[in-house]
Image (tube, rainbow, N blue to C red; front, side):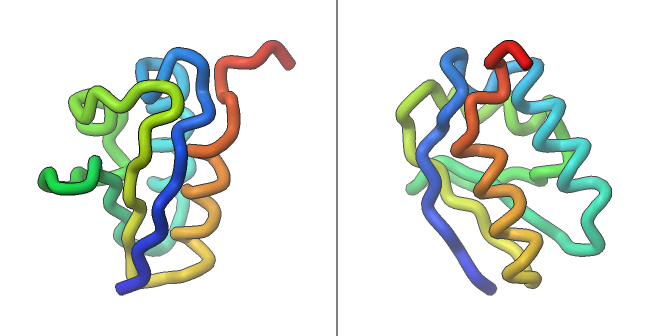
Length: 87
């Protein structure tokens, strides 16, 4: 199972809006993806509520794991992006 470390890019961390965007993307992927703070139990990346329970802030490192490398890479890219930035 590939595991990739990612640094949280959103200025507010993995809170409501970023967690929702990540969860929606994970839910659309045909793979089981987890996200977690190193040393703690990972959570389902398709659940915004579970992502928010991680308490990961801007600049924190999280680990993204799953059976599909492309799916893991897609979620890592979202985690590292500032999802609260104005479009």
